[in-house]
Amino acid sequence: MVLDNLHKDMKAAGHPIKRFIERPLFEFRDEEKYTEHLPHPLDIEHLIIVDRDSLVDLLVLNDFPKHSKSLIVSQSGYPNYVIPIAKELLMKRKSLTVYLLHDSTQSRIAMKRSLADFALIPTGGHRMFNLGLEPEQVVYMRPLNPIQPARTKYGIPLDSIPYAILETALIYSITRGVPLLTGFAANGFVERK
Image: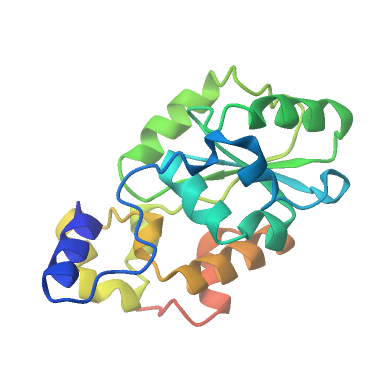
């Protein structure tokens, strides 16, 4: 994948990407480690379902749940002890919004299909909002040109975007209920052709 190749090249040049997650760390097998990154349960306003386990690690290790007042889980159910918390929140809070966050890679298609039958967390009756990137949106993200997204038909993993920019765009999009591309545009990361 593009990001793996970029990381290998930078590592070989003596400049590895800091906090690069090559595979799910399963850092949060221990519930205590995960919950120290969460806001107080009464402050949770959003449930974010991501397409890859490694995105859970990336977001939680960077305290995104606290910054966004969110509970984060992957579509595979990682970390598994978050599922009962998510179910309870969805039962008790009908106003809780469920966000789907995915790459512009082929995983987005699989995620959309699997969420139609998502039995781990019954999301029926809750507002669902697709925060994911689509390949046709990546075309406008010129700062990504160095990783040559055109070679992959604009299929890029979210974690190839500098984290500070990704976090800022995600928080902007979540708090305003707008697509992720709008969050990137509001923060100067999108150029219209």
